[in-house]
Every structure is written in C-alpha cells, then in structure tokens.
Image (cartoon, rainbow, N blue to C red; front, side, top):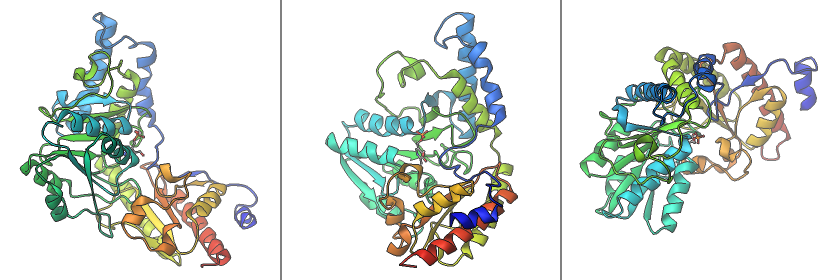
Length: 393
Ligand SMILES: Cc1ncc(COP(=O)(O)O)c(C=O)c1O
C-alpha cells in the first residue's frame, strides 16, 4: 500500500491537503492582522478606567456588535467565552441550575457533541431527568417526538443546529417555535453552522446559542454565547463582574477581535464556493465501489462530506491518506483516538459493515479543486487496496 502511494508520487509526497476544517481551520491572515495591535498597543485591561482600558473595552464591544449583528441579537445579549465547549456548558448547566425552581427535566438529542452530552451527564448526576431524542436516517429529529417529550417539568431543550460529523442541519425555527409555545428555553449549538447557515435568533425563537471562533478561520480558545434578554443563567465561573456578570475573567481581547474579524470575513460567496466543491467531491466519491454517503444530501453543511466504505476501517483510510499528505478525520475529532463506533453513525443506523469505515472530509473556502482532485485520487486507490486486503470486503 505504502509502496503504491509512493509510486504514485514518484517517491515523495506531492501535496499537503487539509480537509479537516470541521475539527479546526487555518486562521485567516486578515483576522491575525486585526489581532496583532491587541498584543502590543491595545493591551490594557478592558475593565480598567484609564485610556488603555477604554481602548481595549472599545475593541471588545465593537467585536460584540459584529457577532450580535450576524445573528440579529442585541449587543448586550452576547458574552465572550473560551469557545464552544464553555458556551455549551454555560448555557446548559447555567440555564438548568437557574431555572430549577420551575422543573428538573431537560431534553437533548442522541447526536450532540460531547460538550453537550457530557453537560447533560453531569446534570443527571445532580438529579436532573433527561430525555435523548432519536434521529432519523438522515440525522433529523422528529418535531412530534419533541412535542411529546416536553412535559410540565421541562425547562430546557438543547438541539444542535448542524451536526459536526455528518453535517445534517436541523429545522431550528420549527424547534424554536415549539419550545417558545411551550415556554421552554431552547439552546442550540451553532458551532458548526455559524456563518454557513443563516441564524436569526429572533425569527428562529432561539434563547441560547453557542459559537466558536476556530471553526471559522479565527483563533482558537475563544467563542461566544448568545443569551436572550430575560433568560436566566447561573454563571459557571466565580470571579469579577466581567461580561455582564455572566462570565468572570479578563476578556481575551486579541482572541475576541480575531473572532469578530473572522466572522466578518465569512460570506455567502465563500459558502457557495464550498458547496460547489463539496458536491463535486461527493459526485466523485459516490462512484468509488462500496461507498455510502452518510447524512442528508440536501440539509447538509456546505463544507461536510461523511462517507463510509464497506468492510474496511476508517482509521486505516485516515492513516494512508495522511501518508499521502491528505488530512481527514474519522467521525469527529474527539473520536479519532477512540475505536468505538461513532454515536452519531449509530444513531442514524449506519449498517454494521459500514460503521467502522467512515471518514469525514471537511473543506474550507481556501480548498482548491486541485487539492480536491488529489485527495479523491488517493482515496480511490486506498479504498481499493484496503478492500482487497479486507476479509469482509
Ligand atoms: C458541534 C460542536 N460543538 C462544540 C464544539 C467545541 O468547540 P470548541 O472546540 O470551541 O470548544 C465543537 C468542536 O469540535 C463542535 O463541533
């Protein structure tokens, strides 16, 4: 196998192709440029009362305005955090604890990111009752099942906007409508969908939404949480009164500025480019023998391809693609060191002989057609070889 790839490249790796943008993205140079003055010029503490502090405060607040505008929120409804995980935890644990006087039942889905599922597990240990909604073959929840699951004691529903493994986009407005009618708080993890799928927190009846910068060509370790005005949250961290008393700790000013710049740079033109490339690759990958595309073809993130190959291991495909210079992941990044089949692929009932052979390919606006062709060419060779070697093939 190794020999064949090397022959293909004349004994050396020809290209380095990054197709794991669902795990993290290259920072946009313009976002990095916007951050730089925050290290050496605008370095005051945003809470300080002098001019240095005021300059840093201005940088944080204008970034807040950028994020708020993108989702039709008010400026004081956005708080900055250390990323998607913290936002999910703050939203779920914070809302559950702050609204426990109204009930102790919380609802989520079987295909959430671990940042949501493990926050639910934590709350179970604290005595909260939980319901995990099923999804259909494409990864969509059933709105009737949601309606039936909401009881008098339900205080919170958390449904991700788009899934990180298979890219399926939920009908968040339909979900929001049900939750608003039933007077239940709706949290949505929009870490993968932010800037790729329009979000309007008012029209979509969203109460809480999580965002992360490093999925959209911004820096790592920074994100945001939308908290609709009037929704009660108990902060996770205990400290100063930063971020409207909801998230203690001196703000990560460079990170916040880079995040806002990155968000500004995302647009529909870039989304269209990713979608075209995604569909181009899907068409080619579908033709590889024993390939099965997972998730919905229509309600799908513009940058996501998740494909399973019968009878072979996703880890083996990943390793050999990596040798050829192509980076992909198996399932989500969190699973890549874990041979357990993905909980998402299990939930959409991926057949047993396909479930271990899945890889996720996620493009970005910087991915070129040449890179896509190179990746697919190698994938074809690798799948063929592994299938021939496989006792199950
Ligand atoms: C859907 C989803 N939620 C949450 C997270 C966690 O975000 P962060 O890496 O910013 O903590 C991720 C990252 O993989 C994700 O894909």
